[in-house]
Length: 412
Image (cartoon, rainbow, N blue to C red; front, side):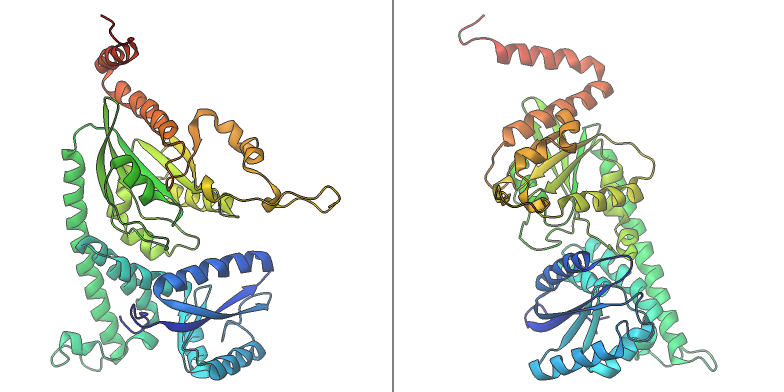
């Protein structure tokens, strides 16, 4: 399992490889490689070069063409590069052929994300979920990743007549997958009991793309100390805190961030974590509005939420975070070229499709605390609607508290 894991202590030089195809143009490929470089940095690798090739479809043997592969080989030999990371999943055959040619470590996007998850997992639950995803990723790649698994199991007496090494390895991995699934079922049952024991408090879940500031916002609203860092997947374990705004208590949950091309193994493995999203009464979708492609990130999150929640319709608040980092470049009057995203101001953005969100969105900076009171008021109103719908007789108490708050000083 550790063959493709990047060392956390030792920095490795890496090159990135992407393809321009019929489905994605060069701009999109560069955007994906920007994210892949951030992933590599999070895992502890330094990106020293990018290679992009135009092909109608990936080469079934080596992903890129022979000429491009020779170019990559020459570069890594001259620059002491120890790792090549591909932006798309590679087949077992492709990995084997590329390794044979380049003689360095080969990773694809999924194995890189799994490595980051393995580094970030802190609790037994998160570690079990990541381990399960890793085994599921490895199972179809046994010929490359596993050669001596029988030593972990005890080779003598464990093989059937004529059983090959690959069959032994497959059986061992399947056994481990079954054991981890059973372990996660027990954890899922325990977490389900914990959720029931929380009573009927309104549940609010923070969701969003990775590195949009969910944990920072969690710390601000709950006055807690959830780990937050400018890295992808800084938070893996679900954190639940009780938050009180005015006289209304509710539960606030910080969840794992989503990402493009999120491996299906991870979605399946993190079922017990993502149940917090399914069980939430209100979703708070946090968006990094300073990111040049935040609208595509919104669509990635919405697509993932549909996979998680199915046909469930959940109320949602859009929180556009990092307004302190938002920048734009006004066009000169004599510049007649079409405007791009970088030429649009925040006020102009607010007047687009965001204007139709009405009172379901707010623009904040979790880092500086700007407009947090506006967010708290919005959260209070939405959470109160849910609470009163569940406990109609409590509406009188809310009215009473509000009347007291609105009395002038010294009033009867």
